Length: 94
Image 1: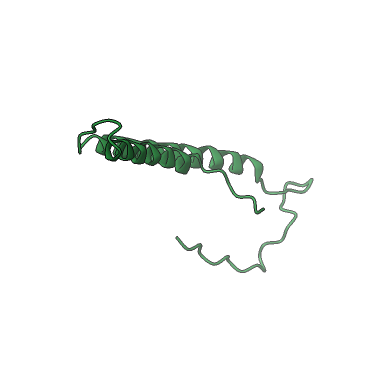
Image 2: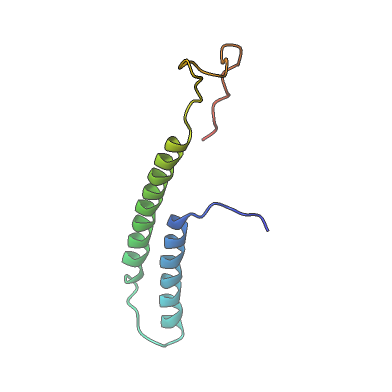
């Protein structure tokens, strides 16, 4: 099985959308009576919370990544790798 990066923002969004689906399913099955507008705050609130969690996750990962990657230096304080002959990397697609 391929491993993938854990994304808690998507987990939060999925949980809130599942709750919204269960709310409508319970109303359709006559288990309870749900007003038509009741699911809107659940979905909007869940998506906003998922966005905040996603931004927080990205911030934490960027801070950890910048701490791990440092430029290797020699004993005289200069770079060990000569970067003058290397071409600039292509821009990353968005």
